[in-house]
Length: 120
Image (cartoon, rainbow, N blue to C red; front, top):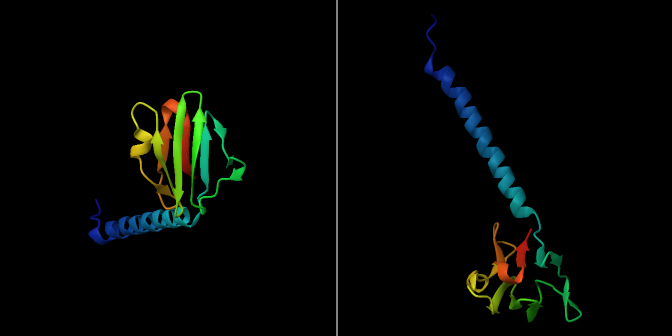
């Protein structure tokens, strides 16, 4: 039986690790460079405007979304969005705080009111 040298085992392992690091870095950089778009859905319907005005993440404003089950008061400020107030029972949506384009895989959800706010 032929004795294998440690160096011949280390080189392929090091190459595989380096390739994995490069691939992971490329995926992360691609994700960061992809422009995230604000999506607001309520009861499965996407909302693009409120009171006749298009929702723009770059324009500071407050508005209220009303569903059959209650309301959510929304604030857009400095490129971020949050639920300020809601009459849902647990206030999880309010406790989420602000999210922005730079938020990685973060959403605001108010399940009782069927509201989802996310960047994707």
